[in-house]
Image 1 (tube, helix red, strand yellow):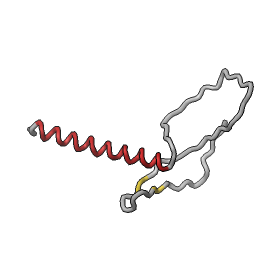
Image 2 (image 1 turned 45 degrees about the horizontal axis):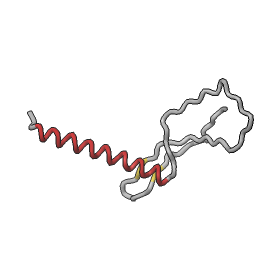
Image 3 (image 1 turned 90 degrees about the vertical axis):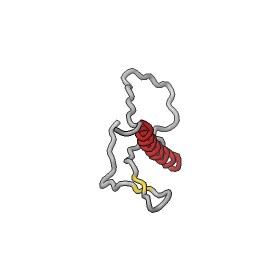
Image 4 (image 1 turned 45 degrees about the vertical axis):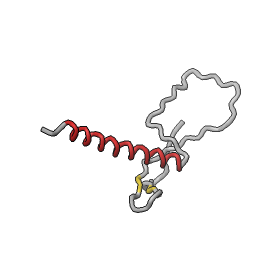
Length: 87
């Protein structure tokens, strides 16, 4: 059986690595000025609009992979065709 301090050290090292990955992901989103939201639902059954101004932008993104050898670079996956969204 491992000593409790060894177990705690192992747990803390894993947690630090997890937080470093989350921090890197947040830095990439801030650099791209992008906020990723996993799930958003809109229910537009009962909406009354008297005046509409502004714009609505809808986009689909894919998760980026970071390149370890080149600091600050992001490799985006190739999309064979444009995503289609119907409204």
